[in-house]
Amino acid sequence: MFPLYDENPTRITPYLTYGLIGMNVLVFLHEISLSERQLEQFFELYAVIPRELSASFSGIPINQPVPEWATLFTSQFLHGGWWHLISNMLYLWVFGNNIEDRLGHFKYLIFYLSCGALAAMCQWLIGMNSAIPSLGASGAISGILGAYIIRFPQATVVSLIFLFFFVTTIRIPALWIIGIFFVQNVISGLTSLQQAARMTVETGGVAYWAHIGGFVFGVILGPLLGLFKRDDY
Image (cartoon, one colour):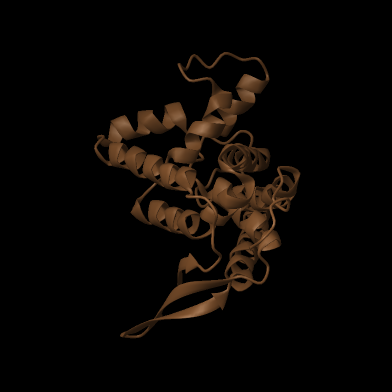
């Protein structure tokens, strides 16, 4: 099941949503042009590396040209593969336009970057000494989903469905799509937390707690920035 678009009209052209998608795609195209070693260095420089962020908060110099706090924002434009990029951009395309419409361009940008940075901080809290880079737009997009679900609880989304060799589209309540996304991440996040409590070695995987944190902060920050102030048609 893949969401294609929602049916809520917008009053403004979502330039920032398009721009964010374009920037993510361009950065990823740069990533795949790099050699394996160059890509590692690129991630070391622009992704969030929890133990280095912890060191910077403690006043320990990292000797990197990009300040560690800045990676809370630069990491939002990095992706680890085609599917990581496509799935994130699909959700941004479907749900971001209406949030941009309700907040306005400037507040929407503040909202997006803030949700992404706060989401990265949530993941950092779970593994402050990890050396595994944290990257991706998932935290910011989770914030959009959190704002969307409280602003448009009755909305429907046109989704692509694969039934063996038959492909069709159906209208599904956005609440279902976003609810499933959130529940899956809560379960996976709790599982990863339990595993971390039992293990002393680092393990890779999806930054579930960034997804959960982004979602929660989206619910909080959206209304604070005026999500409900613009009237519907």
